[in-house]
Length: 76
Length: 383
Image (cartoon, rainbow over all chains, first blue to last red; front, side):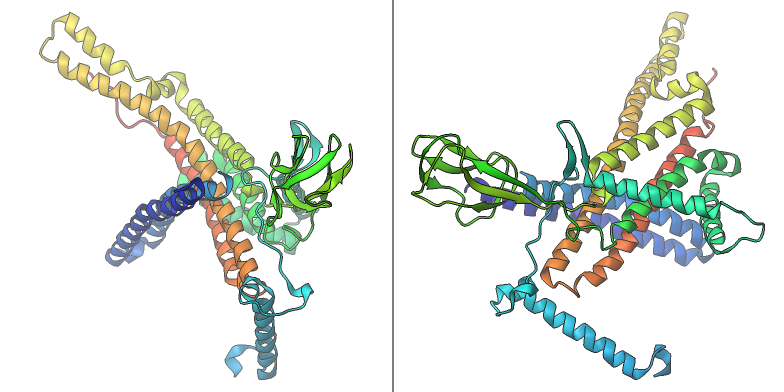
């Protein structure tokens, strides 16, 4: 296996495996938000604000994996 | 069809225009070329190119001090924001006109957001930095969607490649590819000399294999066309600088509010440990090990606090950079695949992402600043 093949393989695996975790995390955040909204619909602004905050923090982890993949594919 | 808001004829015209653009895009873009549909030359869309990845492309200046296209774009943002602010506050009236009213709505919304998280007194203190971060990031993100940004307006850099000595070409190393990187070997002469590319770009050879070259003759020309404007958020230097400002502001606010000793005690937490050691010498042997263990754990917690505060800077920078660069590459890819139509839903996505990222950057700065100036809830144990 030459270097070019390895590079492409590594780029694909970095993005694919690295994005499993954040996807799962975002799903859990959605579940918690919907459950909380179902139990207490009056607290909607507070719940939604916190949901957006935590969702962006989790999504950032996925962006890190994407950056590694892009670096492997384009810069290395 | 009264629910549509326009007459049926207008709807048909719009649908026809969309269909025509879609078909033209399919034929002229990458899919058409892959299926080898014959089409006139002016319909072809050039190959997708992302220039310098982390920094913008250096356009003017030389050596260490260069002006990149992302820097020019951020100047444009600053000029636009200052112009809006200047015009809106020039002749302020109690009953505002339209521009002043719009700016007032925006400022009041931001102030409401900041005060809802930080409280009234601290909200006023945090408002300038947090609101500036929000406005800067969102204007950068939305200006990047304008047509003047991107490969339309570009600065052409051209350089000729010269041979240093006389000889004959034995090997041409760039057949079949158009792009070269700086330092790639282009030609090999029979004198053993290897001619390198002085800069990256598209190469156009003037000679072929077996031709004779004389000294200092031009053998090829390399052209590069970086765009004049490029989204400032896609420059790691800009996002890193913004992250530095945010983290420094948080630390300074915390230092100001809590005083030197309390602030430092969050990082260098030796209090419990020294108390435990003192207890050993005071004779309370039974209670001492517990206090010592808690003290050691507190010291480690202090170190972890330092590390987590430092990684906030990296996470700020890379979150914004990654989102914006991924969006830029997505737009370029979508435009490359089906030129006119496919990019439209992704423009909508970019609008949403720009707003959310600005909100997150400013909001996280605000939340961490609020946590930094909050009164410590745990008191030192007094036994």
